[in-house]
Length: 148
Image (cartoon, rainbow, N blue to C red; front, side, top):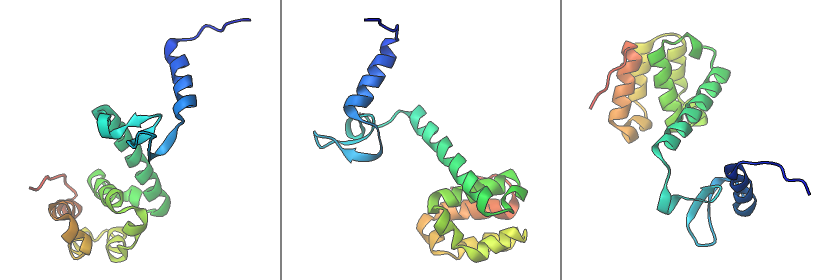
């Protein structure tokens, strides 16, 4: 029998995937703990900061891809206004963001003052409070400003 030289991490990785399985959605393990991935116990271990940033970067990439695919005007926005639209779509989801028809129309026609005002007239603005005010001001001005 011939043995292939392998790194212990690769052997352990393959065994753990086979024994634990790989699940991309949270589930309850046999001990009743909320778990994800390959046996990651979220209740006791959570995730590391670096993992949270990695997931966030992936989510931003996905939202950006979907916005570019759906809205040809997206690429014409400056970076701050792109970030505002990404923030809204991230928070709402692409389908619910798409329901902001008047705001979207105003952004498309580059009426950023009107889009800013329309953003604040929504139920979403009431729900997210300062976030809507901050994003609205950035949409209007095209400049990054934190409001608190």
